[in-house]
Image: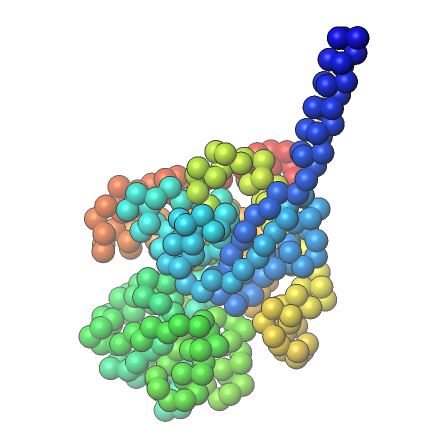
Length: 323
């Protein structure tokens, strides 16, 4: 009888363990801008790829890298998309953030200017709307204008904005600024409204680790399988995005609130396919350039190595497994 009870108890424990291990893991993901380069996260959620890998995803929009960093430190976000500047600066202050994959190794920011401004040199003394100070637009913009011999705050004025790219475009339309930093498809929309592109950041900095997925090292340590499953879903989503035109356009239209299919199709082929990184690996040259630039403003960054804030070990494992 005692042996029977033991066997029954053991069977019950195994049953409970199997049931709990089969449950989807709840994770909150965040994205930081309404641009197509962040669309694989939307695709993973909308097409059921997170569910396929037993991830119960809560996908939220938090504009600006600094706000995302604060949300993750507060425990409200588990994996997020953000530009690297805010993440590295938080690490230099003692945080344990780490990138687990790259979305894009190209900078896609463009300065769109009001009528009458036809070149970069005509931006001298003008006001340019960016995101928050410390955001990707601010950080990349300072690098680009410095390389062009223009000092932010003296030769050109950066005006911060809340609300993301729609707000910046509205500022340009209202005439409160002379130019704005936008990404596609908002650059295409700005051109439709009659505004002129005067500076493509990629022409100045062709190698640039601009966007990636990051989390905390402590989260990877405590939930390695969850992070691996998340990356599998995001890899699947990236492959879907790069191969499924019609499905991706539907996702883009829904999240960007754009109903013009011809516009979205043009954006998909002309812009999105050139921006996304297929295997999620950061560009080494882009990372080195980023760290070198950051060290000019913060000497502590000179001691940072790429592996200090980038961990591709899970991607390496998936590649080895030929996932």
